[in-house]
Length: 410
Image (cartoon, rainbow, N blue to C red; front, top):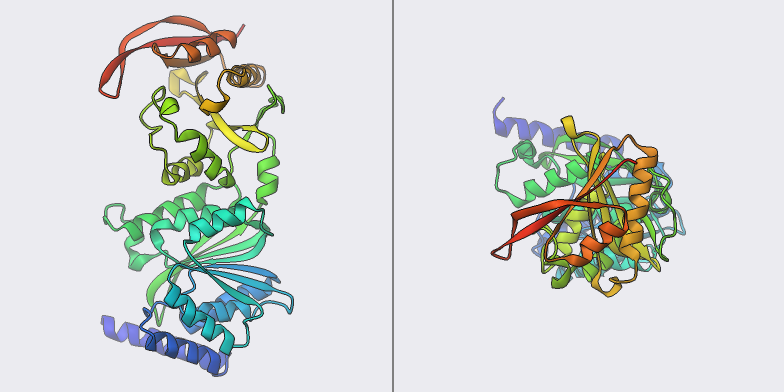
């Protein structure tokens, strides 16, 4: 069967599904017509897909729905109709013209009292929701720029309850999703999102391929197995003291993005660390780090929290093969909190816990010879300087000696 015949068959089956499973709908039809007349791109979900979203949201009794990417409000109408009388849908749209069309379509469908459209950067809006502790959502539909798919998923997780469902559209990219070398930012964005979904301990996910009026594509359908609050309060896999030097060690979480940038974006911090800790330290850098730190894996990445804010971090990375009983330690602290004993207490507490509760025999850490403050932290935490590594590092175009420190099981 040739390509045109195949697409015709898909279109015909979709049309039959609509005839069998639902009557004509004037409000939905008008939404598509007005969106097209206004020059909006023809990228809304197909009617059968809109009905699928409606059924999913209704079957789980969703009371609060978040939609990322409004376009002309077609999927918004499908989802809002799944809500109970006291339900609410929040839809995020970056283009004011799209939002205006969507609001008109939503009002025509008599859903203006349930669905509201917020105009602006979705990431900024989501971060603001996280910061003010927005009431959790029960259902999330992500259908926006694919480059930010992982960022949207991470924030959706911070805004959902346990048992919530997250659906991401357009994940197959006509089969290109399996190719790591397309050079297409949209494909790469979806691949990053799928990797995050697959390893995230708070998600159980499935990928579904679809064919129909919209061609060949697919959805990610995921359920949240643990709330953000429960994940943040879950103890780390070692019994580390909850309070050290007025601070506590805890897992990183998506809502740490702003405080991470605030304290990491400091040349005085960056100049004493590897280049993978950059300056300037941007929100994109924070997103990359949080995707690593909140994902599954054997390495331990902890935030140092003071007064509810992440002010630094400490990581323990286990070696492999013949070094499987050795851990490499890394850490940093916001400059405004230096000299208060916080870092020493954090290093001491983590090392004590690693020796007490794992088979670790050796913990090692390296510092630049130009960073005496870090050397003092290690010495106070029971480390011994084992020697100087001459010209071991090249930082900002200059070769720097390194100091090798280690603490071994007593």
